[in-house]
Image (cartoon, rainbow, N blue to C red; front, side, top):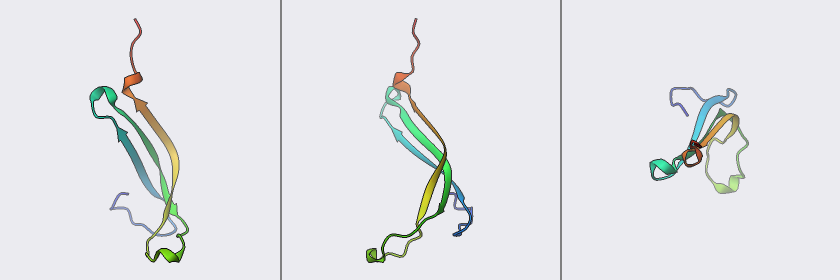
Length: 73
């Protein structure tokens, strides 16, 4: 989340999630999701932690795996 964006329980907050994998250049693969965080219901109070819970609503996704990109001659 962008710390400069005010967060309240009513306004969706734009967010990006990136999962990157691979150690070497030929193993590069990743996925990104762009979307919004919206207020979600909290888990049972038995957890004893007062946290704000959000649900991530995906609007776009992109994935790639450079090991599968090649030219056929």
